[in-house]
Length: 366
Image 1 (cartoon, rainbow, N blue to C red):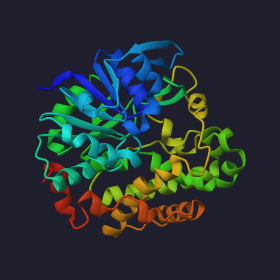
Image 2: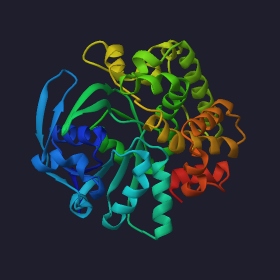
Image 3: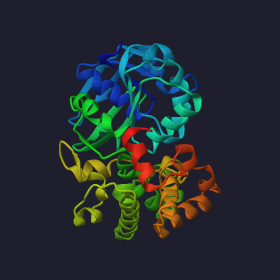
């Protein structure tokens, strides 16, 4: 029997720390769980069973969690929602770890999507798992945040409009009713809408590739939004957005609309639907990184974002020359074949589906 007020937050990075503390402050009973092999990333919360959260106004809260653990079975027992705030590169491993402990009636939400709901559905089918589980995605994390010390996380900005979708899409009303009490969510048509509306693959890879020389030179002192987003980079970002929009249109989902002038801001369209306590542009500009061309701005957003988007484009005969160019340049820069390494439509279980069949799977889960 699951309890609507009990939540498991999976992961050990800035997103998981913030979500665990934030939901606890909102009155939920939160179990935070990291994979045992990454125990060091939550060593301080493990020791203290608490997280220090610095909110957007600079106020520090010491938040006592219900449980901080590396035991997935303990963390998932009796919870209603399983919130996965883990990098895309770790999604498959986390899915495999939690699969044996899933209970009927639970909902798994991945923040942010990166095709995760389709991936998990395919894995559950392959393993013959018959549990009554709802899969869901948020298109991004509910805030911009950073770990500023072990066990201490800071919120710079918060999101005021989060797309949420379920697989199957018909389950959205129940999940929306619950998650609206946590975050400002609106319903997306399906889990491809949440994935394609994730702006990280749209903004990060092209900006990182175009700034590669500067990133190589200054390393940890590079600030993407403050220093790297010039008119030239903004033109690249807008072109990638337009190509992704064509892919979305081809499969029948909507992209969130952004004012034209927002493409030319220092923070680009990343800040359109966020708020800050003061000086939104300045708060976004203070978010540092990437410190290397081998950061998640490429190693996550290219293979788990742009590569499957490019595969969808080819499947539905959409030309994406700039998306393809960014993938190829990122592969050359990092001497890694991201097309080979990246997420495939076969892994997602949709490689052989027509548009109509794909829409049926998204709606019904079958």
